[in-house]
Image (cartoon, rainbow, N blue to C red; front, side, top):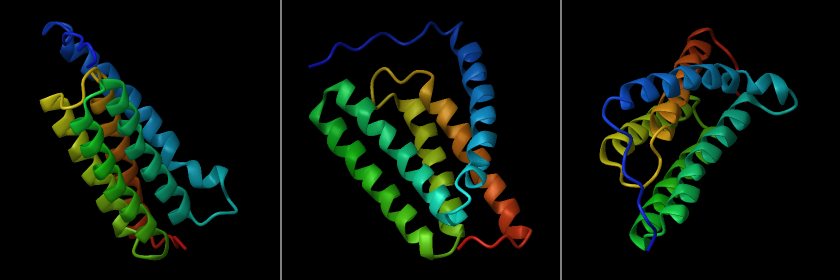
Length: 148
C-alpha cells in the first residue's frame, strides 16, 4: 500500500486551486491550438489524441496511488474516454466536446472526492484545460470549421 499525503491546509487550498485553474486556462488555449502544430492531421484526430492522453494521465496517478481498485477504476474510465476519442475521429465533432466536457466533470468529481491520492492541483488544472478546449471546439463547430 502507498502512503497517502495529507491534503493541503484549507487556507492554502483556494490559492492553489486558483493558480492551477489559471495555468489550466493557459494550457487549454495552447492545447486548442495543437491542430496548427499538426497541420497534416485532421483537427478531429489531433483533438482526439489530446483527449486520450489527458484521460490516460489518471492511470499514472492511479499506479502511483497503488490501490488495485483505483487502478482498475481509472483504467476503465480511461478506456471509455479513449473509445469516445476514437469515435470522434470519423464521427461528429460534438463527440470531442462531450468527451472533453465529460472529462472535466470527472476532474471535478476527483477534486471533490480525492478518489486517487496525491493529485491536489491536477484535477482543477485539468478540468479547466478540458473545458477551455471544449468551449473552443464549440466555437469552431459554430463557425463551420471542417474537422475531418
